[in-house]
Picture 1 (spheres, rainbow, N blue to C red):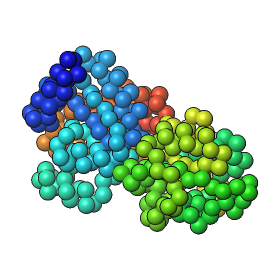
Picture 2 (picture 1 turned 90 degrees about the vertical axis):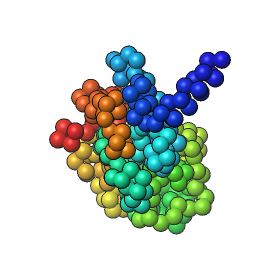
Picture 3 (picture 1 turned 180 degrees about the horizontal axis):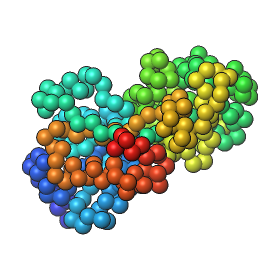
Picture 4 (picture 1 turned 135 degrees about the vertical axis):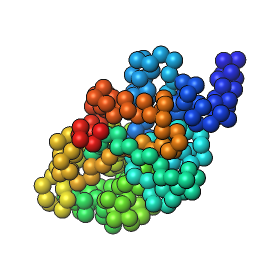
Amino acid sequence: MKSTMLKQLTVGATTLGLAGAALAGNITVKGSDTMVILGQKWAEVYMKKNSGQTVQVTGGGSGTGIAALLNGTTDICNSSRPMKPSEVADCVKKFKARPHEYRMCMDGLSVYVHSSNPLSQLGIPQLEKIFTGKVTNWKDVGGPDAPISLYGRENSSGTYEFFKEHVLNKADFAAATKTMPGTAAVIQGVAKDKNGIGYGGIAYGEGVKHLKVSKADGGEGIEPTEENVLTGKYPIARYLFNYIAPAADEGAIKEYIKWCRSDEGQAVVKEVGYFPLPKNLR
C-alpha cells in the first residue's frame, strides 16, 4: 500500500514539473555512478538539517542523467564529465538557454589493479596500449608473464567518456574489456582477478591497489592525492559537475546546490573521499 502511494506521489510530482516538485520539498538528482555515493551522502546530511526537504539520488551514468535532464525527469544531473557540445545544443533547443553548469568537487581518476600485482605505476601511453588491446600481457609493461584482464564502464558513463578521451586519445576500448555497471562493480571485478586492471573515481578502491600514473612511460609516477589533483600535477584529474535547466535553478534547488558547494557541503566531499573545490571556484 505504501509503495503504491509513493508511486502515485512521484507521478504527481512529475506532472507538476520540475519547479513544482522542488517547491513541494522534493529534489531529484540523477546521473553519474561515480558521484552517486557522494550525492547520497550530501542528501542524507542535508535532509537531517532541513526537515521536510527530500533529496532523491539515483545513478545510471552521466549520459543517462543528461538525458533525464533533457526529458524533464530530474531536477539535477550529476555528471563526471563536461557536457558534450551536442548535448549543450540539445539543451539550448529544449530550454532556450544553455544549462547551468556547476563544478561540485574534484576527482583523481584512478587506475586499479589486483592487490598482488607487483607494478607500482604505469604511463599514459602504456594505459592507452593496454585498454585498446595493443598490449595484452603484463610482461610487456614490466609485470609478470600473464594475460591482462580489462574492466571498464558502459558507454553511458562519464568516466568511460573521460578515460577514452584523455587516456585513449578517443580510440575504442578493446573488445575484450568487461563492461561493468558501475565503479563499485569494476572494483569488485579487479579485486577477484589477479590479472585485472580497471579505472574509477578516487573515492572507490577498497580491496584493490591503485597505481601511480606518469604522463610518459617511465616518467615520474604521480599519486592521485588532493595536492596533486588540485595543482593539476596528476595527469587524469577532473571536475565533477551538476547541470540544471536554467528555469529550475531557483528556490529549493538553488539552495541545495549552494549548500553542496559551501564549506559544510565540501566537508562531506572530503569525508566521502573526493577533493573539495578550491575556494576561488565556489
